Image (cartoon, rainbow, N blue to C red; front, side):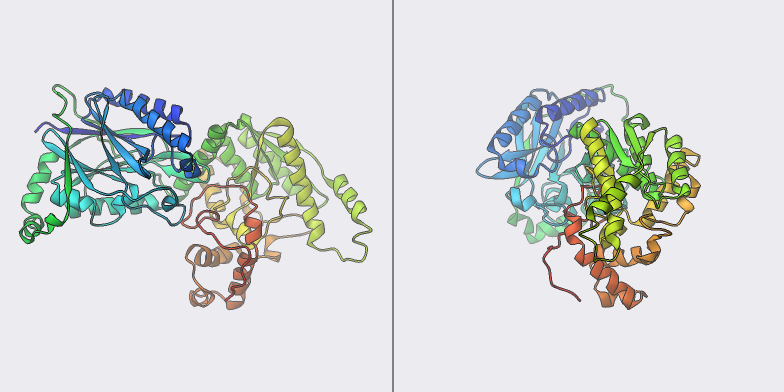
Length: 579
């Protein structure tokens, strides 16, 4: 048998950009054609972008998506293309069109609709039915969409065991979180080996609001061995020749198929066989690349790639060209600025040092050293006089009240007001530098350091911020972020001699409790059982619970953990439950 060639078009689509996504698909078809593949696979909901959310409630959008599909179909020739799109019939389905020679030959509809974490597919889609397999010459393949393959059993098992599919194709839009790529590979390798089937997994890449898709499309053979892997966090075309004949040999030694047929269990399932005609003439083509792209070198390197891609895509997909942010001389603003410079180019990032009466020479030196290192502009706007005027205006109102955090927060809000004025005047997007540790316990000022259009570090615990700073310097081969900034004790500098540790537990301790409570949903007793002091645990849990109203007003930020605030972790603001 001639080698069967698959091409996985790992492309970066834009939600709602139907015309643009059509052009991206056509460009990928043209690029793939030079390899003369038998089959070209695109990600889940390619034409609409993923996730399209309430666009799916607009009949006009669904009609336009079908027109986009027809436009793509006209560009498909001898190679079979499988393209994700929202399919409207009596209901709406998350679907994959199987296209050949200008015609949509069949449509597969997703069977498992995720409705957890960031997913809301039950809100929009009807569950698909039927188990089709597709015959392309002597090769039979099945199609599934994303979640379908995460479950053992149907539809993949039915396609392989009862439909004689040698190849299982999966269209996916699998959102990133740290470490997910390795988990996903183990799962897909298991599906391939358990079903004695080659699995070709095509994943979306790019940023969409708070989500990042890492790509890393995969091909595993029937023994669970890796044949090819797409690049991480960038577009790629993965081309591989598949050992179809080995699937038959493997199955000769697999008694399950015979036992199942003897018991007649396959009669319970109706397998629809769709004949796509003979394979294309592939005479004389050279062997496929079948490249295995490397994973990022470390967890920190992986997260840094995700943050950089997420920020860059948020900008270009929403039409922003320049960013501005406050540079305090501290670690958070330093890391946020470094990521912005990497994602957008230093010439598009504008820093502002906004010293108050409590700012130190160390902070000023750190801010200037950072801007020089990153190659970004830095403007100094002292806020001392504005702060004095605020206090004078409020003097009568505050006459009988002692000073407290109110005066501290005034400084943060003055800075936020100035940054938003600059944004308003020049059209630059304000980047909020807050991290997950601070946002969790409310150690952030509404309309102060929380202002902005995007929060780069929103899902990064403070301890991870330091790791990312070290990774930025490692990749640069120099101290892009000054070592003094990394080494200094964290401080908001809103009162004399202030340190974060005056208010918060040490960050390594705080982050351990937050990981247990926010990401794993452990209770107070369970967290204490991990070795944390009960008094500290109760303080952190109470602070997290009472700060929900603040987080609801925070700008969007890039998801990199399993439980990001927002779509992942949804707690009521009005909530009297306490442990």
